[in-house]
Length: 397
Image (cartoon, rainbow, N blue to C red):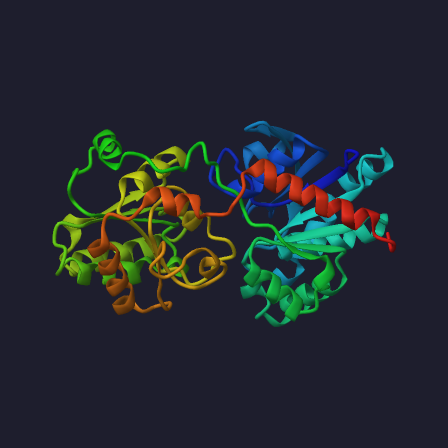
């Protein structure tokens, strides 16, 4: 396959202010850049006097963990006129895309997230006569319920040249709203098997300073309402009645919703389970892997997902998973085989499932890990590039 010249557009990428932002987009782009001529463009929203450009965003670009990222300042209005964000984004990237096209370095535009990236990228790609592919990652399910933005996304799905979905649930959603089934492809996120794999739990616990014998439940996800950590906490209080030595470790950034973090701490205190629950905050990927390797079960009561990497990483570590059947969780988690699925907002069901996992210990971690059919980032990149090639060689292009 000859090298393809790609312009990849995404607002959410790791940056000096937030190293965890868009980390899975970054990993995919970094892998794609090894096999293509890829220009990563990050629109950076700003509003004069209210939400200024960050210091790092005032330069032409930056090198981020092996990937060169171009900056595209994007005027927008904070909290208001959100239905115009697609237009603002299109204007922000227009000049750079035009320069790439004029220089013979633009075969296809690759937008991450349907809104606003997909809207703005497709409008600009159409002006330049270049095909556009959008990747849906989960937020689109919420945006489709908004009257004006939802209408924009439906037009995007009906007219975009190709659509990549990180889960089968999203592919169904896209097709239901007008996407062409023949050019709508599922490509899951990847797992770094060099980091997420079964290990000696006792040895890892010793490294982390954890009790070698206490049952441990781990959850990973920002402390925000849709992750439903409050449901997990309520379920965990019930689990403690049967497994009183159990510990719950919740890994996730607290800065995204301070009021929810306060609510969680108040709930934990009121339930009298503070000595059994630790809110660990944000930790790096290697530390996450260690906590998963040390734990007995992963639990997440999430309300919405596309392809939940925390679930995939847990399974890769051989850890049984208790979670909700949202997104593609049901594609990977099979009751009794590698965990259990429970309804959203059902703390009783979650508590019962956690007890089942803890009562069944030990689980076969090698078997759980081996059963996860997910490739690495290089494999994902090659799948994406092969899909782009089918778009570029289709008769209508």
